[in-house]
Structures are given as structure tokens and as C-alpha cells.
Length: 194
Ligand SMILES: CC(C)(COP(=O)(O)OP(=O)(O)OC[C@H]1O[C@@H](n2cnc3c(N)ncnc32)[C@H](O)[C@@H]1OP(=O)(O)O)[C@@H](O)C(=O)NCCC(=O)NCCS
Image (cartoon, rainbow, N blue to C red):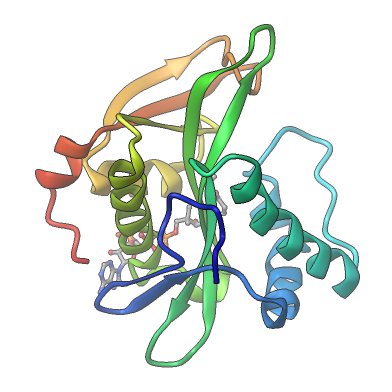
């Protein structure tokens, strides 16, 4: 299927398939994005849990459509190959500046269902997705998070990303954030298995 994307539809790592979302993922998407303990880390408040299966189906359609709008962004499901369980999401997404619009910046992000945390899936999937992003032409990716999001900072560190520390005025989300930047040479210098 043609997606108009610069990202591959599917990449396999030793344990994961990093693949496009499909309609059948909707129940699991709902199970992940209806949880406050996940969504409270993903954006600014108010944190609104996903309401129902229709909203999850619409989310799948929406994230897949974003690649057609801009082929340098892509959302991918992390599927555990051995079990078929969809563990979570990795994404490369356009970032709009609060006061400057879009100036060519993209973020790398991730979230897991809590039942799939603690296995290294976020790091393994994000490394593969970042490699796809660099192959598609990205020179660097921004990784941003709430300053107290220790599990997310640990993922960034495991990828070898450069820690830029706390930023008082996040230009994309506002407020205080912790930023990392990831470039191809960082991944080359890490021992993340893919
Ligand atoms: C951020 C988030 C994805 C991190 O999840 P995570 O499971 O800690 O990260 P990974 O999948 O890379 O797993 C790493 C953990 O698995 C462990 N692990 C176990 N088996 C492993 C294996 N075979 N290979 C690698 N790591 C393994 C690691 O030791 C590590 O645990 P530790 O932190 O206790 O040392 C998760 O906490 C989450 O989804 N949070 C909510 C959403 C969120 O905050 N998203 C980011 C917004 S900026």
C-alpha cells in the first residue's frame, strides 16, 4: 500500500514489529489512551481520557493520515512479535512553536501500556523509529518531557541522546520542560539492540 510516507510501513527489531496502526488496534489504543497514568505525561492539561472505541478508531485514522500531510512524520505501533500484543506507540511529529509556527522541527516520542513497560520495548522501538527518521532525511530530533518524567528521560539516555537539561520556556509546549536532542551519531554510539 502506498502511504506517501518517507518512513517504512514496518520495521522489525529482535522483539518488535514497528508498524503502521490498523483498525484492529483500536481496543488497545483505547486501553492505553484512556489511562490518566499514561496521558498525563503526553501533553499539557487538561488531560482528557479517550472516551470510547469510536474515538480510538478515529485516532488510528488521524495518525495514519498525518503522514500524507507531511511524509516526514510518522506514528507507529510497537507490536511484540512473539505474542502479537501491541505494547505502545513511537512517533515522529511536527512541532509548532507557540509564537513562531512550524520552522522544521520534529519530536521523537513514545508511550507504552503499563502492562508492557519494563522490558526495553520503548527504547528498542524508538531506536528503530529514529533510524527510519534519519534515513528519511531528519538531521536531529527533539525529545521533550515533563522534568519529573524519569522513565522517559531514562529512555532518552539509553538511546544516547544529548541531555539539554531543563528549559524554562519550552518553545513548543510552554512552561518548564526537559529536553534532549538525538542525532544519528548518538544511536551509532549506543548498544541499543535492533
Ligand atoms: C516512558 C515509558 C515509555 C518508559 O517505559 P519503560 O518500560 O521504562 O522503558 P523501556 O521500554 O525502554 O524499558 C526499560 C526498562 O526495561 C528493563 N528491561 C527489562 N528487560 C529488558 C530487556 N530485555 N532489554 C532492555 N531493557 C529491559 C530495563 O532495565 C528498564 O527498566 P529500569 O528503568 O527499571 O532499569 C513509559 O513509562 C510510559 O509509557 N510512560 C507514560 C507515557 C510517557 O511518559 N511517555 C513519554 C512522554 S515524554
